Length: 304
Length: 290
Image 1 (cartoon, helix red, strand yellow):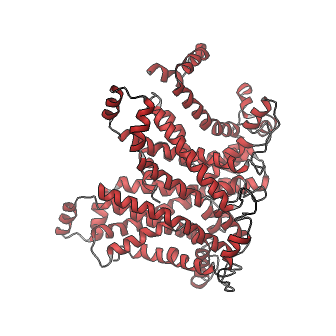
Image 2: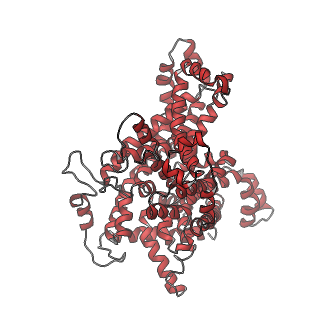
Image 3: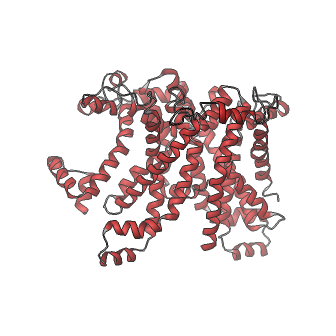
């Protein structure tokens, strides 16, 4: 079995086909898995190869034909990253995603702490009401949130586009939508922390905020990381909320910008392929470096 | 109380108040996204009885966005579950388990925008671009515009999204499979049970709970389905790949019909509530057992 695995990953060139035939006939399990793996790999490999091909080549021949010519270039990535539109939209995506992760993380953790370790009237009722808000689809809030942002901008800041023309709107919208899930996830983690530890800190005269900051947060890094990764990727990959809440063209995130490139220019595959991989790079880096937290976050997120 | 104040204020202002406002607007024409003229239930009756883009029962089989969501619900959910289960079961039998699982799971991390483009590229009608039509060409067949034909468009998008989501089903089911005691399985093997019998009689019954977790997640995904449709077809051709969430966006922001769009949003909420209710109830009973 060990040699089989090694063969699959790195077939020896000289006898590769002969070994492959032998390997394939050995077991239908391998055949099924290899077919599945190919169906999963070929689409993304095709677009990846295309992103490194010169523009005229993309139009004149299929990406599978490059294997014989090996004509590659970085021009598409250069065009994507230095182009005023796409390059800046990558930065915009970061400017949107990081605060839209940290704001609900902090506000949600504060609330989750209160729901698990501070007694106050109607505590469990309020908590359940917040959890119940997880049912609300984004579509239920799009129009009124937009209207609210516009009238807030007009009445408080004297400019109707003050919020929707900046990142503030999309930060607030994402924060509000993340909160019920964030509070639910973190509260369920916080209540598992040892009571003695929190009581001891109380006896020593620590304030609630100090307990939250010095005891709860350091002990809850795995739960905080799971939520943060889940939320960061959610925001980074989001299209719908950015379409509605980012109204200033210079501030558009990458998802929206790419969708505009495709509808405006139709089949500019050299830009779309490179753009897609720049867009994918961030989630893939997060995925491969923080895989454990990522899977935990996703599994926890299945209740959302 | 100070600790929950920021969260409660944000939720009241940006979630609770908007929900009430949207319900209110769904009984109004809502032109220009403002309350204009109270129309009672008219938006809802139009939606279910007159608007053929939403529900068309005159054709057979029925058509419309709501019917498409139903098609998605059946096909997408069952394909994701079947593929996830198949890979989870088969992968435990090979040495390259981690590799194959990573390959299937990675699309979960990427944006629906990227998924849409990856598959638009695969489905391209140009045989010098799209690998599927290149294969058809190799077999001597004419290129097929998978996303441009009314009879193939839904299946093509559904498969693209199965590709993106099956990894989730696989990870959950695989984790559950690993949780099943190896001793039970070995004991069955010693007693002469076939591999199929072990799967059917031991593993599958023990997977009932994780399968329901995944099913709920996939069903909610289907109701909220938007990004992939926006990127791949924008509801076309001829509105054939419309789904409810796309129609809500289209009617509200492209058509300026705030009331009508709000009514569609309320329908979405009403579809999600029973699923979430089932989910939360199950989680509570699980918590009690645990």
